[in-house]
Structures are given as structure tokens and as C-alpha cells.
Amino acid sequence: MSEKHLTEAPWKTLVSKQGVKDIGLQKALAAYGKLDAAKEPAAALETLKDIGELATKLKKANSAKEEVVAHLDEILKELKKTTPALEGKIKNLAAAAAAAAKSQPVATTSEEEEEEEEESPDIKVRLANALKKVKGANGKDSFAFVACVAKPVYGLLLARSATEKIGAPHKKVLTELTGAVKFLVGSCLFENDAHTFVVDTIPSGLAKNLKKSIKEFTGVNCKVRVRDAEGNVADADTEVDPDEVQPQQSPAEASATTPTAPPAADTAEAMTRFTARFKSLQPNILKAIATKTPQGEEIKQRAAEAGGLAGQKKFEQADQLLDAVELLLKKMPAAAAAPTAGTDGAPRDVKLSTYLNGRANLRTARDNAAKELLRLQQAILAKSAGEPFYAEVEAGSQKLFDFLKPIDDAVVDKLDEAGKCLDPEVQVELNKKVRELIQKQLTALRTHALSSFVEKNPFGTFIIKQPLEVTLSALDKQLS
Image (tube, rainbow, N blue to C red; front, side, top):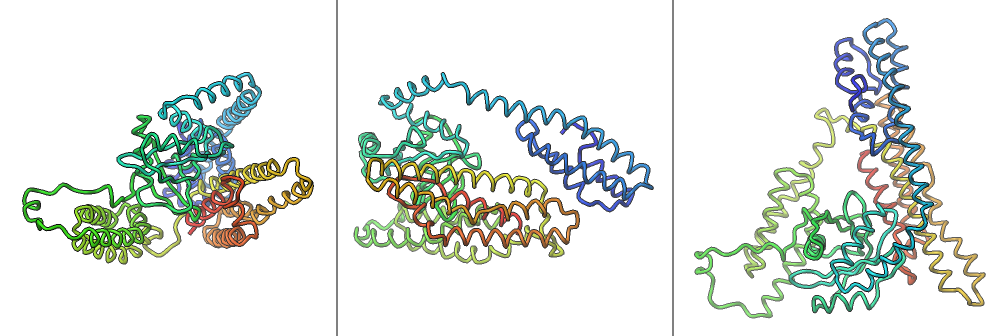
């Protein structure tokens, strides 16, 4: 930020020089400095409020130190100058959103465009338009997708809207395009700045193949992730696919290859065995790569080499490399855990933005889950329309919203309390209580009588449980 006194460095210097006991102001100023007020005016305003409260308390506690009091006065002056501009931005954004909602004439044009897209035989147009809609929804809506498993490039189509279902016409288009008949279906939404494809289980190489497909058909090199209902994530930029890495043989290697190829049955059995073993290791390989440590890079390299050797049908050497990968993975927990705490074993310093963003993300996830439950209810009622038992179904469908009752404001309230706590030791204890509440809510979600129904039902694909689980689990890790 441009404000001189609303930055961390001068206050940090003054604290050291004057021997001031900081109660969290330095952390708040650092958090404010990392925010983009133009994009996050609400978060910036919330942080300024915290800065104002802390500065006022520090003035009283250090009233005898003129230089400290003078600096805090400047902080409060700049805060008063900056606050009205942020409040104005928030009002302008709200007004713009309201104006956009009222501009209904555009709807007719959108409907016409959707009709043109549906009739367009060009898969590039259909896919590009659908991806734009997913990104435009910004995680508020998910779109069904179907991928056709094909070589050299997967086929991919997305629904035109959040309510459209994937059916035989979509699969027919992809079969005609690729000649393949094996399909994967799921939903796609925009989260963590990436097009995220949600499936029941993550097949090896899916993220890389979807990214490759999008690049091939639209020319766009976008960020792609795949995740499942348990919160496991495969990133196209770090995923290791055993079918992808097949280094070319040097002339010496080629001449040394045994002329007599092994029987086809033995080769197929060996490949099946290797692939199963590689898939069992892949989740831990991805976690190791994500640490961005020398050990993680070595694991990535050896795993890729193993995949290449398997592609050359050198299964003995490939298995030896996987043996080495397993040994490295066993050594990873200690190395990966070290950065989470200080050298003296102290708990990790939790940033103020973690509390602010966690609170907002939880509320957003719950709101989105409520919208998806409403869509599920509407789908059920639509199927029952005209039936003699409609009234009974309508009354019973209200129980769907009981699924969200365990996700109350207990975590948000305790998170707010922890974020405003000025005593580091007390804050650590409050963080533990937040994590206990998170585990309680996660257990309630996973054991709820409606848990399996909201995930798998005959009325369509609805993203209800997964965002809540992912958001709560992510916050739990940030506070650990």
C-alpha cells in the first residue's frame, strides 16, 4: 500500500528502538500491506478497523513515549483518510452489482447466444464458451462435464448452464470427434484460480489430459485441477502420469535391448502390476512434490523415470526406481513437517488474513451449499409434479436443509475471537478450540443421515458436501 504509516517496516523499527511490547499491530499492518484494496475493499476495511483498535490501545499503554505516540497518531490519521475511500468502493461495487441484476434485456441476447452455441458443430466454440461461463460463475455454480478417454488427446464438453445435464448427445459428439467410447463425468467449477474438475475418484493423469485437451481445442493454456469428494487434489502442473513420460532410447540403449520381446500376456500383467503400484504411491508423491523441497524434486524425477522405463517395458528397472521412491517418501514426513514450526518448537505464526479469509470462505461455502440444496429440492419437485403424492414430497423435501444445521456459526464466531486476540498464548489455545469445532462439524457432515444422498442421487449432480469439507479441512491445516 502507498500510505507511509500504514506499513509494517517503520512500526517494526520503532518497536525495536523504543522497546514497545507489540500486541499484534505489526501483524495487522503486514496483513494490510498484502491486500489489494481495489479487489478486496471489504477485507482491507476490516483490517483497518483492527489496526485502529490496536493503535488506540498502544497509545494508552505507551503514553510516556512521545515518538511512539506521534507515530500512532499518524497511523490513525492515515486510517481516517483511507477508510472513506474503501467504504465508497464497497458501495460502488454493491451498486454496480444491483444495476447488473436489473439489466434484464441482456438475458434475451444470452439465450440467443446459447442457442447458437448448442447448434454450433465446432467443439472449440462450445468448449471455449462453457469455460468462460465456469470462470464467470467464480465458484458460485458448477457445470456438468464429460471427458472422452482418447489418444492422443481427450475429448471434452461442458454443460451450457449450471442446470443442464450431460447426456447421450454430448457423448455422441465426443465419440464422433475421437472415435473413443470410454467416458468420465463429473462437475466443473472455478476455485483457487483454476478450472477445477470434480470426480468421484481421480484417475492417473486426468488433470494433465484435461489441460492438454483444453489447450488443443481452444488454444488457451489455463490452470486445471482435479479433486475428489475426499478433498484429494491433482494439479495439472505437478501431476505425474506414468503414460506421459517415456524418454527416447539412446542408440547404445537401443542396441543393448534384447531382440526377443517378452510374451504379450506377461507384458500386460507386468504393466497392470506396475500401474497399480504407481497409483497407490501417487497421492504421497503429489504431496511430496508440493513441498517444493530437494527431496520432493528427487521423488518427482525418479517417479517420472520409473514411468518412462515402464513405457519401454523395462519393468525390473522401473520397480527398482519405485523402491527408491518409497524409501524417499518414508523420510519425507520429518523434512516436510519442519517448516510448520519455529526452530524452538513454537507454534506456527498464524497471519491475520488467515482468520479474515477463513471466516469469509466458510460463509461462502455454506451459502453455496444452501443454493445447491435448493437446486436439488427443485429437481425433486419437478420430477414429482402432477403426481398424487406431490404434497407429501414437497413437505418431505424441506428436510434436505437439515443437512446444513451442524454447520452453524460456532467455527466463525470462535475464529473471529481468535483473530482479535492480542495475547499470543491465548490465541494458540483459541486456535485449538477452532480446530476442535472444525473436526466436530466435519464429523457431523460425514455421518449425517443425508450425507450419501446429497453426494449421489438420481436427480443430477449437486456440489453440496465437497466445498464445505474442503474449506473446513483447509482452515484446519492453516491453524495447525
